[in-house]
Every structure is written in C-alpha cells, then in structure tokens.
Image (cartoon, rainbow, N blue to C red; front, side, top):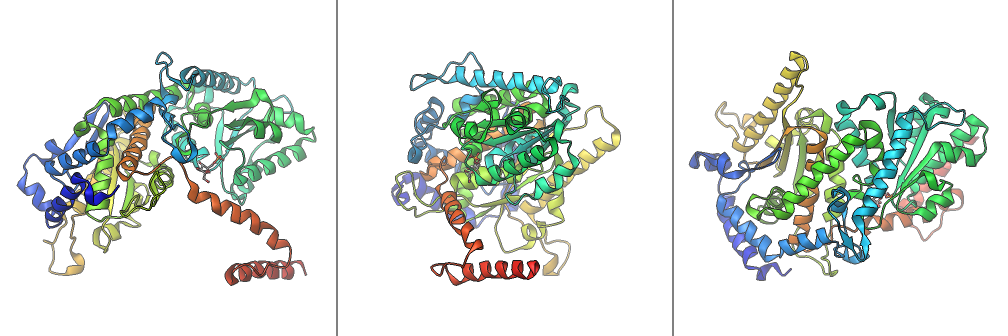
Length: 541
Ligand code: F6P
C-alpha cells in the first residue's frame, strides 16, 4: 500500500495529531457515557475500548480504512477457501475446522466439511478407546499417561486449552494425566520420564510437517526409553505407544506410526491455527470430546459474528483496527497480554506465536518492502503476577505500551466463598490497574517519582464465564484480529519464511561440533564452538 495515497490513512494521520495531545483523563471527563459509546458486545463477550485513546470519530475513520482496504472481500476470500496464503499457494481454512456438519463447504472439488468431520470421528473413536481403557500398552495394561510431543502450533494451543479448561475434565478422563514436551534439548523429557510407567504411557507425535527436528528428537528419545524398558520389538512399541497427528502421512509412516494410529489434517491448516484439528487430540483426551466440540462451537459462533456483523460492531474487526491505530498512528510498538485469570496463563505465549509469526513481516503479499510498521513486540503474563514483575515499566517507564486485559465476570459458581472472594480480588485488581494506567495519578505527592502519568491505552475483554465455548470464541477472536491487521497492512499472515533459514543454518552447524571448526564461519561462532569442544575435552580427561 502506498499509504500516502490512501485517503483514510492520511485522514487518520491528521486525526492522530489531534489525539496525541489528549489525555485519557480528559477524554473520560468530557464524555460522561464514554463506556456506553465505546464498548461492544457479542454473545458471551464484552469488548471495552473506552480506555483506548480514541473517540467515536477515530472508530469511524478506522472502519473507513477497513473499507478502503477491501476487508469485507478479504473476509469472504478467507472463509470460502481462496488461496489467501499466496507465497505457499494455499487456502487458510481453519474456520472450516469448526463448521457444523450440515454447513457444506466445497473447495476445489473437495468437500472439506466431510473430511473435517470424518477426521473428528476417527479422533473421537480413539479418545473413547483410551478413556475406556481399551487402548493398551505393551504389557496389556490400559494407558494412563499421555505425552504430547510437539512444538509451536503443535504444542501451544493444546497446552493452553488443557490448562484453561481443566475444571471441565469429565469422569472418564480423570484417570488420565496429560503432559506436554516441546523443548529440543530434551529438558522436559529428562524430567518427566522417570515419573512415567512405560507400559501405560502413550505418546502423541504432533507435527504438521513431521520434519520438525525438535519434535523428532524428542520422539526418538521417547521410543528408545520404551524399547529399553520393554525389550519388545519396535513395531509393537510403535503400534501401542505412538499416535501421529500430522499433515504428512508419508513421513509419519516412515518413522513407523501405523496407519490406524495416524490422525491427519491438511496443508490448508496453518500450524498456529491448528488446535481445532487433530492437533487438538490432547485437549479431547483431557476435557473430553464433547467439550472439544464445544470449543469448536464457540469458535464457529465467533466466525459467524466476524463474517456477518458490520465493522462498527464487529469485535475482531474493532480489536484489529485498534491495534493499527496504536501502532501506525500513535506510534506504540509494544503490546502486553494480561489475563486476570490463572487458567489463561498460557495465553500470552500462544498469542506470541499467533501474532508475531503471522504478522511479523516487512514485505507485503507481493514481496514489496513496506514503509510502515506492522506487528508490535508482544509479551504477557497472568496480570496479577505481572503486577509484581513488569507493571513498574507500564506505570512509570518511558515506553508506550498497549495492554489487553482479559477476564471473566463469573467464576467459582457453587464453590466456596473464599474462592469467590479471590475471584473478586482479581477482578478488582484488573479494573484498578487499567484505570490507573489510563487516568494516572499525580495528586498524592509532590514527588515526581510517586507520580503516575497514565495515558497508557488498554482494551478489556470480559467473558461472561470461561467455558469451552467462550474459550473457543476468545481464540477465534484473536485469530481474526490478526487477519484484520494483515489485510490493512497488506501482508500474508499465513506463511513464516523468517523461521526457515535458521533451521537450515542449525543443521549445517551440527557437524562442526565434531570436527575442526570451518574457517568460513564468523569468529563468534567459531569461538563458541571451540569453547564447547575445549570444555568437553577437559571433562573427558
Ligand atoms: O518453525 C515454525 C513452525 O513451522 C511453526 O509455524 C509450527 O507451528 C511449528 O514450527 C511446528 O511445526 P510442525 O507442526 O510441522 O512440527
């Protein structure tokens, strides 16, 4: 986009000049019902934008920008399976993974909905076998421990969901413990394996490509552990102890996962958009298939809202546009995710991948360099813990930071009074922090180090309650927000070429540790490898 020629962009630049001089305190003072005018609802969700540095005019100019960037047409392209992932010539049809069975979707002659539901059914039957103790390990005992081996999109979504929805674990899954292993160096496996019973442990190798070295290294270590413990042939171990959730059937087969243990998905599902597919198997094992289907249902409800609601009331559109406003017009390049709910502890890491791997780009879909900013640096933590870690910077540092506060209105229904009070305490802290960040406070003291400047913009997303459905809706909300921003910035959010090169460089360096270090390498890399070799030498002597 030549942004200088886009009228809505130019208008927003002018409007931002006016808004930069206005403090949120002043905006709240001048509009009595600011919350009513700048908060929006969809079923089970409230999005409060009143603590953003905006007016209604800002929102109407932002929606004009969305119109000018043909957002409506792009949304249709996404949902109907056009090849929006241009560099890889693929559709990005994660929305099809949560379509009800009766909503038929055909893309390029393939009845996508049928495939999706067939794969869900295979997953369901497998979940049942494990839950009912029919899936047995090498000595005939039923499976009790599940270990998901995967990384990035094959780890973060299932990990987050299992943790967030643990309270929904049905009786039939109560005997199962579900673990996650991702790190390439084997740290997690090293700690976990001594606590597991080999004969009753089932590993899921979760990898879209089935080429990710981190995952394969962990899978190989796990298999060696089983082989040693059982003394059984490898075919038997593969059959009883490994399931593949993958898009690469050939590789999975070559590794040794038999056909009946393969759960498949398609190249039109991006890794970081895959928790809705068979990659969600650990979620279904942990919280049950019914709850997994409710997650899909909640995401689908958000899809419908996104596709059918006018931009000025559309939650993902507004969330995306607010980000664009902060980044491109108010020059705010840091974004923190603050769930005031310990169940969403993994949401920040999940969103780090979703947002930064999708929109951390500096060329547009045609490969041309951009002359405007895109995805900000994003990080986060459970809000109340972050208060004791990095809020000092939010309140009194030199950086402008946009914050997302995420909370649920209701929790612990029917539980003890103490827990309900803890929830209220958490809510009070959530609201107090966003209020102080917005309004600041210079009244208490003459000492500048006790002043709070305020004017840090924030969004509050309030769920009525955290349930499988609202969880699905929340994640779909962020997925679509990322898509909205990519359309405004004209980038392809569905590829990740930036992470490919590093993998190649790493594999070419591997051999260097075993020989004389090549002198084509830079002196830092040579020096560090030599240091490792010297330490090893000393250790061996
Ligand atoms: O390296 C990045 C990445 O490709 C992510 O996009 C993906 O989620 C992750 O690696 C894992 O990939 P796979 O599921 O193919 O093992």
